[in-house]
Length: 279
Picture (spheres, rainbow, N blue to C red):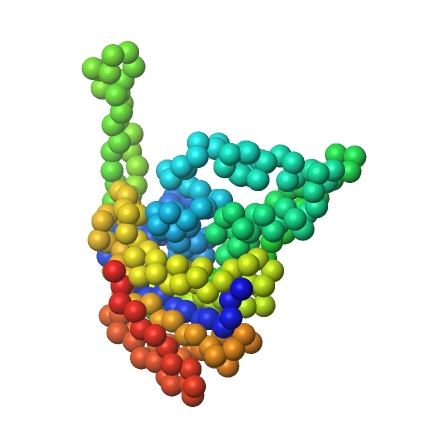
């Protein structure tokens, strides 16, 4: 049975001396909007959710390069793999239908039935047909509570020279950027109406709820040292019906977060939020 109740949620996390989401079009500086508020894209947050779900043993279709568990070099190869995917016949109109392929993909991969996916389907006369799957879980980009201060440091990068590696190669100059200190907030929602189409159910919602407090565990890198990004709080609103007692916009506006991470929640009659500490 698919998701029974509409769910809204919010994630409050802090950043200290880390680059939470570099912009490759801007020298990998931390993303900011025109007013100087820090931003972490929704794609970045979904990537971390996928990684944590994969760490928990869930089958994930869109795997990161560092976390590939099946050796598939591309999404196409993974989808058409008979061992790790659906097999080539699942994408051939002479063997099956797009509706059946979408059903199989939703059953196999949790991130597909959660966030959706677009698959290519081979139709008649070699014409391609897209199989769009619209997922019930939506997530907004995260923004800092206040404009962020960014520190940029010049660094040198050394590599071994050619041959046996004993000869040092030339040093190259580069820049490393970090957000000194900031608190970010993002919001999300889970739609029972869309969950019916993908088979996303209450158990799937609970799995995402379980990994959100530890979203940054096992995610360390040179740009994000261990402990530099911390989930402070997860706020979870579970409505008493599929359509929701209130709109997501009204629910999300009840949360007010300060620069130090402290927050307040306005009361909505009949909708009690669950407040979960970060890991």
